[in-house]
Length: 340
Ligand code: AMP
Ligand code: MG
Image (cartoon, rainbow, N blue to C red; front, top):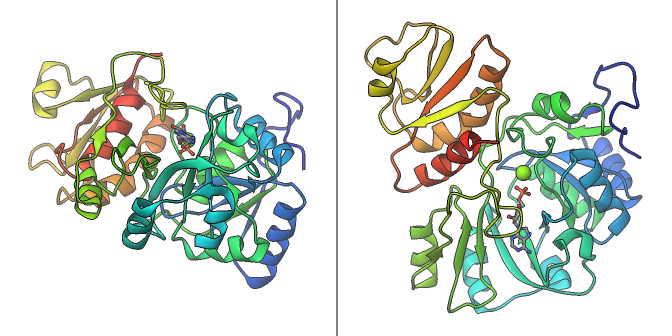
């Protein structure tokens, strides 16, 4: 199960198998994982590229397939609290958060146990853990009985995949197996909170679970890591530029004003909600007709990918209302737009 070396294959045709989640294929894919292979898996956030989190060699294959830098640690997915206790040191706050949000799109940074190889955590003493909600991934986790390390199933830095076809497009040559679980329910990566010190939780990455929701459950403030205009990551792997289409992308607070100022026919405009005006123009798109941030989040990456394949010289996107789930959309848009 060695991924293709860049340029090793003459044909550019994708070759990964896309599997339906039948009991038989789940058994087969569990076997692939137990033997140190890679499987792209559906989650409720985005598709992940999974390997046995206890097997350093298997996890190194993830980095090679994605061309992900070794200093960007992986999130480990667990089936249940017992599996969590095998790999990390829980605390009271973890109990409360797990009861409120797991299984679901919340990743916790915890102290790691020695069974987790250093390659998974980029040598850090902490480990990122999540209990995913997607029923197929949960069945696969139980079938193989192993924690699975899984970053998004795309070449490093590109827009995250929210369908099996997206995975095939980006990694079809580098991996053999994709488990198809349909389009992802949330379409944005998990919220990440560092909860090693239960008194001082820190939000490292916004997601569909908002800081306000975390604060309600924890009964105190959650500090947000402030992003400066720098290419240097503030936390491991949190790069200023990420999730980026190949076409240049600009973000705007008010897209109407921006469009009035330039508005070339060879530029595509992504509105947050369906605009009353000009909605028939071929170069105007929207994330959610009614302005629902959850629907907008679910559709963001698929639309960026579609427009990236289109005839557009440049893409423009309107920022979401910044409160609640809009914060996650804006985080991804700003990083997608950050300069190279
Ligand atoms: P993804 O690429 O969506 O799988 O998300 C992985 C991200 O989780 C990394 O880029 C880091 O930002 C974060 N992460 C993973 N492990 C850790 C850790 N031990 N400490 C801090 N952040 C982490
Ligand atoms: Mg990623």
